[in-house]
Length: 619
Image 1 (spheres, rainbow, N blue to C red):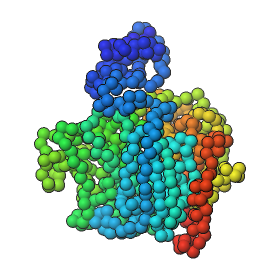
Image 2 (image 1 turned 120 degrees about the vertical axis):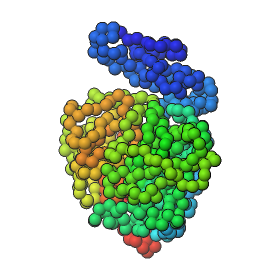
Image 3 (image 1 turned 90 degrees about the vertical axis):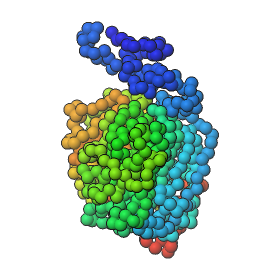
């Protein structure tokens, strides 16, 4: 027998709750959710009575379904609401707004000389700046980006990190997979719908080009899981190589190990650690008494960051593109490619300045903070003195793990009925070994060797082989997923003593299990009920990662490590999803073909002074 406690404000949803035979407690909700704006309970708070209540029984898990719309959506000012139809409880994998509004942006990728930390060097920047322009759109808008390649001697392209691209994988921006690179002097238009909302970024996926500055932020406005007053927009944290090019660093990474960056940047700037009179620290302005939303993005090549603001807690409301139940921390850890949206209240007694600290997590690799504080930006309250902060740092975690406490706001339970199953061995080029069955279970063993794994062909992308009914070459590391909406399970075992941030294109995935040691089906602890959901997660050093996602987006998706040197060396897989359906909704049209035709003409000409590619061709 289940019971309902503290009905009060929950009375309007009692009839719905009867279907769940569950128990809800409004007292479990934070003050925000009990406010006049959100005076109802969420189905995610359904629970069993304690053991022994109303007699002993075996606990039965109630279905996890989306919560009812917040009552506060009658008040348009509530951040939990959006447009009167859609709100924070909307499952955007199933539905969402389509505004009809087109946000058009023009990018010009070119060689320019910049000094992000006071030291000048030639870079490959978008519109002459690092980061490139922030794309700002609303949930449901169509985003159209015209990318012109004005580089003298390099191809380029742009990948839209974390964007779902539902039945639109051709615009994902993975050269050699979904498209050919853009030749010098040519322009390509990418078009996609903002089906998700939150914070993400874009970057070149051409060889190691984004280490040269070819990246920027994307802000898609939508509802939030907590109230705030001021949106301060994206805050990017990145490593920076001021003294050598990306090609030189990638070459060194393959032969002598990863190079240590020369500096860290916050929103593209910092002081020179060797001479702090050069360069500029990034500064954020806080208004006393107000709640500020900050959108942290790790846009690094090879650095895991932990970010904190002295003297202030952070309330996390979103991880990657997934709204989460708000939780409070003193710092957040960001693997490469990850994003966290947080709310910070400016609640100190007197106006002052505080360090916004960006720590390179030593436990994640060899890229350590220089110890001088020069990696730090700062926050300045209105009315504070102009001097740099003298604030005291929090004690931050020293490990190398994903954030705990990340619970998606819209709950999803994963089907556990298929896994585990019998597996058959596949042959995969070094340094990979993988096991897959014909249904949906993959096993990927990542080794500690350097030879190339995935090795794409810029002139003949994987999708072209599918269009011509040809077999994709073995060294493309392609695997097929069939079954409409079936669940795909991936067990990734890391044999190396270093962590890998694993990113999947075209999907979010659920993290069923993660830890050190070896994953053993039936023995290792797993979580099938509303597990963490995102598009980048950390594969622990000498550990395992067990993830799952729905095969609901026909196309070709890459799964890869987001350490630039590793994907350059081929640490990637291609997942060909529901191949038989792909050309029922898309075609390789004249514009797509023209990009490949002009690329081939340039690549085989004397204008290509650098010759053929020397790495996997990605990132």
